[in-house]
Amino acid sequence: MDAAQYDLYVEELRSRLLADPQVRGLMVVGSTADADKRDAWSDHNFWLITEPGTQDRYLDSTSWLPNADQIILTARHGAAYRSVLYGDQHRIDYAVADEQGLALGIFEHFEIVFDRGEVLSHARSGFDRTRKDRIEILRNSFTLQGFGILVWTAYGRAARGELLSARNFLELAADVLLNLLCVHTSLGRVPSVDSLDPRRRLERNNPRLAQELLGILTNETLPACQQLLTFADRELRDRTPTLCWEEIDQVKSWIGESATSI
Image (cartoon, one colour):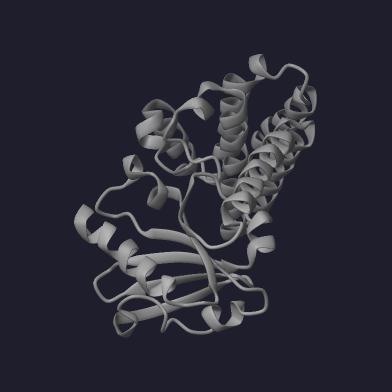
């Protein structure tokens, strides 16, 4: 989808929703709110804010969307989120909530398309809470502890022969590690970083980090577990000396000892 088509979709959506008296506002998020992050593969992401008690009307039907007759796939994600795929390969992700629900949402970059109530105020509350909660959680020692538990679980599952399950835990550990890097290193200060999904645009933001991490994750699970721990130690220990590195060393030692006997 080129830039003109991309903007036209937002304008058509805006026009349709402005004609609906039950709609309080429209807020775009992610790359839809930040043109610098868009390319030919970008989808649309937005929040539809409606009168209290009317959300099901928009969650249970796609008829209010532009070109609804061209939709080929619709998916539900929890109570308030939906994904739609059009026949021209265009994808949209959206949430439907009232203003109070918007204040409880999770999002970073946002832009208000129109506001017939207090949408902006509640959006700022959701944005501020999202950022504050993530920083507080990721600075807590429990996050690194969780990383160690995930790596050890991945190793145990792989050693048992449960390779698919092991890969899942290894990928989860990698996500925790990337989140920690976003909080404690310069990675989090790159303007284009996605704090809600740090894998996004990592190849552009830090090619060296992306290439090394991809190499670890494409390796066999047993050695990958030890490599991921070494990677975490090198990238984070000096920056976070008060976190539980002795315990992480213990997990690394267990894996080293076990590897010699497998």
